[in-house]
Length: 223
Image (cartoon, rainbow, N blue to C red; front, side):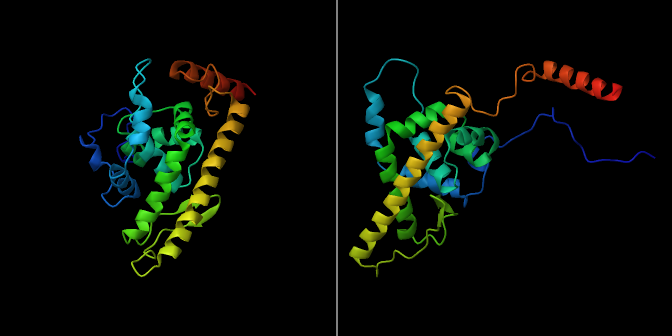
C-alpha cells in the first residue's frame, strides 16, 4: 500500500482573509507601529509632494513612514533588504497594504525626509515608554540593543527625560547614517538599478530555468 502524505500543491488557490488587518495578530509590533504613526503629524512630508503634479503619483507618506520605522525597529536598515522583506514577510506586506516600493524609492524617501524621520523615530521610542509599553521588540541602533520599557513614568524628572531624548536622537541619527552608508556601498557593488539577488539571465523565467536545470542534470548524469 502506497504511503499517504499530507496535501501539497504550490499551484492551489488560497482563500486568504479579505481584510489585511486579519493577516497578523492585533498585538503584533507592526500593528503597534502603524497605530502610532497614524497619530503623528506628517504634514511636512505631505507638503513636499502637494505642489508636484508631474510624474506618477507618489507612494503614500504614511505608508512609507510606517515601513521605514518598523524596518529600523526590527534591525532591517538596508533599502534592498526592505524591498525583499516586502515580498517575503507578512508584517511588511501588512504595513505596505498591497504596495511594493522598490529599494530606490525607499532610499530616496529616507534621503529626502531624513530630518523628519529622525524626529518621528525618536517620538516612537519615547511614546512607547510614556505609554507604559513593557517591551517594543528589539530596536537595533548601531549594534546596540535598545529595549523600550515603562521607565519613563511621571516620577521621572524633566531633565532626565530630556537626556533620554537626546540619547535616543543620537542613536537614531547614527542608524540613519548607517542606512545611507549601506545603500551607497550596495549601489557600488550591484549597480544603482540592481538589488543584488537577481537570478542571472537565462534563469529568470520558469521555462528557461527548467530547461537549464534539465540540461545540467543530463550533463551530471553523463559524467
